[in-house]
Length: 492
Image 1 (spheres, rainbow, N blue to C red):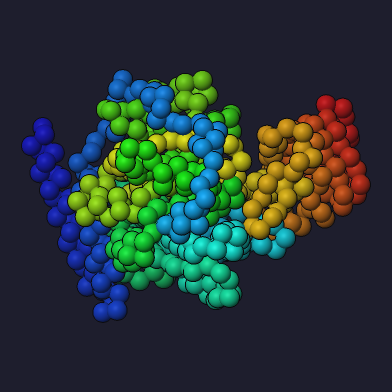
Image 2: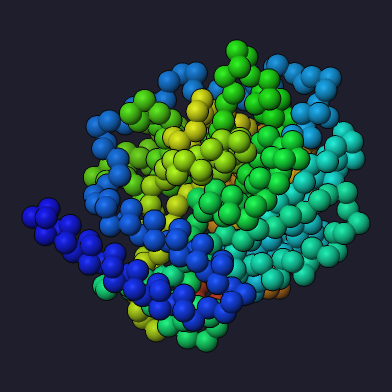
C-alpha cells in the first residue's frame, strides 16, 4: 500500500512541478526572480504536505511545560532595568505583521489603515509608539512591516506621511503562493497575474512565512550588519503589543551565556480565548499546539480552561542570528495548516499555511513569559473596536492603557450583532461612544442605534426583533437592563 501511495505522491509532485513551470513562463522579466523564489518555497511546502498524513501530534505524548519554561512576567520585571537601556534598545527591531485586509470589518485595503482612535490608524499608533521610544531613550529602533501582495501598494503610499518621524521604516513582502484545487491538488491560476479571473488564485501563506521572506529580502542580513540582535514581532491589530523594556532586558542579559533565542508571550485563558494556541512540552521541546492540530476527540479538552491555562498572544521576541542560522540550515520546522476556502464561483480550494509561533521548537532555550492580559488587545471585529474607542482606555504616545477609573482590570464582554459588522454601519449607529467604565457585558442584536452620551453599566442586553427598531435615547443610562421588542426596558 505504501509503495502505491509513494507512486501517487510522485505523480502529484511532478504534475505540480509542470504546472508551476507553465505559470512561471507567464512572468515578466521584472517579476521572474520573485516568482521563482516564491515557487521554490511553495514546492517545499507542498512536498511536506504530501508527506505528512494524519494529525501532527500524538495526543498521548503531550505534556505540561516544565515549571521554569514559562516565567511569570512579575519575575522578569522584578529584575529592573539597567543603566544602559539605550544600548540594549539599539539592538532591537520592531516587526509588525501587516498582510491582512480589513474585509472582515467591511473595509477595503489594508486593515492597518482603519481608524481606531481619534482618527489614528493602527499604523499611526505603531509609529507614534516607536517614535516616543526613540525620543525618550535617544535610540534608533526601526519599524519593519511584513506586507502581503494585498497590502503592499496601499501601505507604501501611506508611508510617505511618516518621512519626518523619528522612525526608520522598512518593508518586505511575504510570499505569494497558488491556491490549489481541493480535488486535483493543482493550481487554479492560469498565469501569474493578480487580476481578473486570477484575482482569487493567489494567497499569502500565513505569518510563518516571515522567516523565509525576511531572509530572502536581504533585510535580515542588513539589520544584523547594523548590529541588531532581536526582533519583536506582533500582529499590527494587537494594540497591546508595545515594546516591553523588561522582556527585552531579560533577553539581552541572560545568565551563564545561554542566550534565549525565542520568547513567546502567553497570557491566561478566559472563556473568550478557547480557540487560541497553547504551549505544551512535546518530545522534550516547547511546542505551540493550535486547535487545527488537535484530533477531533480531544477538541473539548483543548478548549478547557482547566487543562490548558494559557494561550499564545503572537507577541514574539526572536534572535536574528538564530533565524539566519536556521534558514541557512533549512532547519525551520513548522506544522502545515491546511486552510479550506470556497471561491466566488463555488470552487473548493485549499491553501497551505504556517504560523510564526510554530517555529518555537526549532530555536534553542525557548521560553514562554506569562504576561498581563493588557498586552493582548486585538481588534478583529467592531465589538473590539467599541472597546478601544471607549473611555475604558486612554491614549498616550500611541499606547492605550486601561483607565484608572475602571474598578477592575478585566475588559467587558461585548457582542455586537450583524447590523454592526461593517465599520461604516457601526459608526452610523453610534452618535457617540457610550460610557462603558462600569460595564461587564453588552449584547446588541438587530436594528439598534445609540444617541449621544449613553451610559452602560453592569449587564446590558438590547435585542430588536425582526422588523422592530430600538433607538436608545441621548443621555440614557442603562444599568443591568434587558431592552427588547420596541424599547421595553426591563430590569436584568
